[in-house]
Image (tube, rainbow, N blue to C red; front, top):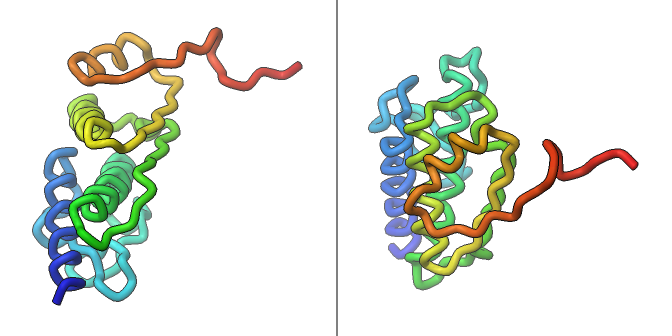
Length: 153
């Protein structure tokens, strides 16, 4: 009974995240997490995050964001959940996802950090755009000189 409730919470949180991030390729209400495989499905068919299967590249990214954030959030809410409370995002906007979607993700990550989770977010994206989505979100920025973290010696 407890596992079924956790799965229901995971599905609800996942769908809420998809809605916040602006998923458009599929109706959010037909997407769920398979209770046996823990893989997102579209009306029972496994989502393979393949743009040839009808998902846009930016919706693929949105779905991944939603899954990782929902998994962490569900584990945090559950009395028996286990999650390290650490999420690492490397170039989360790699498919030129809409700024409104990125802003929603950053807001979610900021809220998760306020609850004791640690979020690492690495990007080579435009600094002015990043400053806009970070406005009002508590964060610490580690400045890096130049365009890359690693440079040839």
